[in-house]
Length: 392
Ligand code: NAD
Ligand code: MG
Image 1: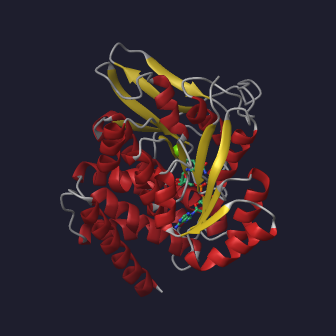
Image 2 (image 1 turned 135 degrees about the vertical axis):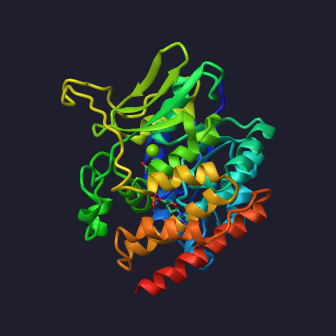
């Protein structure tokens, strides 16, 4: 009899976190959430602990530790309370789990993701920013530890499903990432100057956290995904293409050298992706219905991305070909710009402008170590904060 898999969920209070817990709860005979972790939402974390009864709960915000500890105690739970990023990394590598779902948003996810990779855990990787920031290092650790990495990004998960070996062999000509085009598809650049955060996060097809929703609206999300695909599947940027597909039903394509193209299709619901990651190479129910293409409108359409209106995609391709610390700079500049946009401090078009200016102003160097990458990340954040305060 197979044992119950013990799952640590980093980013439990987020959108991916909710989808993951939904799938896990459908299969108590197979999966159990043993570690739940969140950034600052301590009350939401306690509530999740009441329902899922993990062995450990971690809050990144150390000031929230007493609230977490007392809340768990008052709820009569045996769940142990922890706080801080170091505790997260420690739990990711510990016997408390054999599987880690990395669903923290942003570069903040890197320490726990890297710890899971080094410890050889099955790694369900939603936190794409950690691959953009430190992809070579992370993939090296995955290979060295023998960890099984399943991408939890619908496009990369689709490609993973089309490639039984998980990586591109000789037979692969290119991969084609699909993009919904986001809420502003079809608009010209000058029409984007006055769009609001509320409009930007109203994604037409996917329900997601605020940061990735803004990234989808600028197409930076697709840019980050191009870099993510490069690391996951070992292809150069020239063999990664992007195709806008507004129905979001074809999640990506792999084209082989013999003229054959494979795609994976499904409703836009991350529970499918998470079920693939949890059960691979088996399959389990995810709660997502099968695809009825006629009911979905009967048409699948495709168009090229508009790089004039959405220059972030071009900037990401550029950072990938520049290499070294350029992707780390791109990611940190974007995180700071998106955060300022969501706070109403800068306009939508300032996001690509800030990333472009920052990439031009900051030197990109070889990325030999985590220290070098962290230094680049910090330099980019300093640059962005100064630029943002000048805009105000
Ligand atoms: P979200 O904003 O809904 O949730 C983010 C989670 O991260 C929350 O639980 C939050 O508490 C936690 N968090 C934030 N900062 C933290 C910190 N410093 N330390 C510890 N935890 C912290 O975001 P999301 O939409 O669930 O996205 C999570 C990740 O998954 C992102 O990297 C995103 O790009 C990726 N992703 C999401 C989707 C989706 O459908 N939502 C699809 C593909 C990839
Ligand atoms: Mg995606």
